[in-house]
Image 1 (cartoon, rainbow, N blue to C red):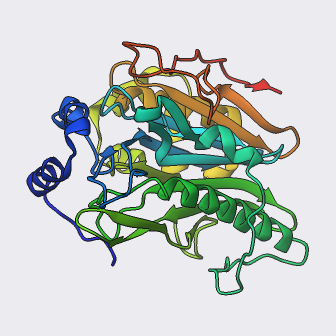
Image 2 (cartoon, helix red, strand yellow):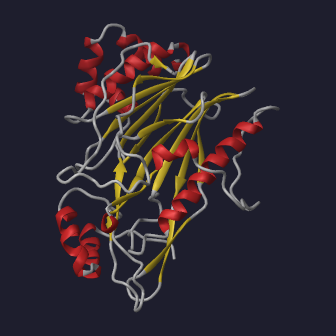
Image 3 (cartoon, rainbow, N blue to C red):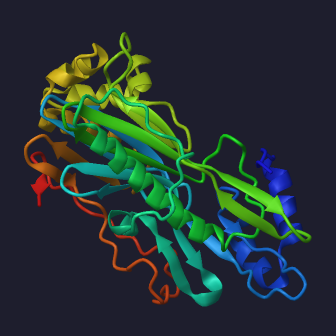
Length: 362
């Protein structure tokens, strides 16, 4: 059964009605904070089944803005701190020539066992190859010339490996998520240079399907990933910024077009940013160098950032590979460990400081 949308009130009523006494207090504490339907799922057990338990997902929320410059692909993310446990969209280096960004439910906890079930951004670079991939899975439709097909296979393998990991997580989800049919559980944006093809950006989305069993006990299944190529654009389309946000927000490009005062003031105050902005709006983004484009994205995102929102910025350089303008937050906890979350610490994330133009190359 594909999930359908539900109002906030109906979701609250459904989840409270289905909560066990053990989970009620935990859920009550987060219920009236800004939340998504799958923030907490805890269901009554079928008769004789003691395996179901509470599971908590911390979300990567905010903006992802990507610009393809003449010498590199700049990827910037800005956190939308809708609740204390949210994290910025995490940029992950996949080898030396590719980055991926995760949006949505990327950090999973089992509170009853006081342990982390999955930290997908930390696991993504080393996820094992998927087993038993069928011929019926979606295939990437690309314009690759000879030699570029291996890159498409690489993206598909990465997407399938992530789906396999999500399937393990789904085995722990037995409450109704109340996701609408067009709302993914997780999104991954991939940016790289394909041999004999050039820069490319892909959006990979993971949707779920749920079937009710006894009472309010559900089985959750991760569907095949959905692929959309965001760069290069189709012939005749503008060659500007690539933007994805979760939850949906007005794009930076549209804010500039409509004369948003925050952006207008910040761009005017920063040397050289008016010229960069004009090149982007005129569709000449590929004439810019990556350092100038990165400075512009920091200026633009800083103008719309919420207080204490964290930013990450990386570049996939044609020659030097992946480097950082702003490194990801330092994460002291390893995914899947049995370590205990410290009392009174709703988030284990600490901010990072910008490294400045030019990047910190590894």
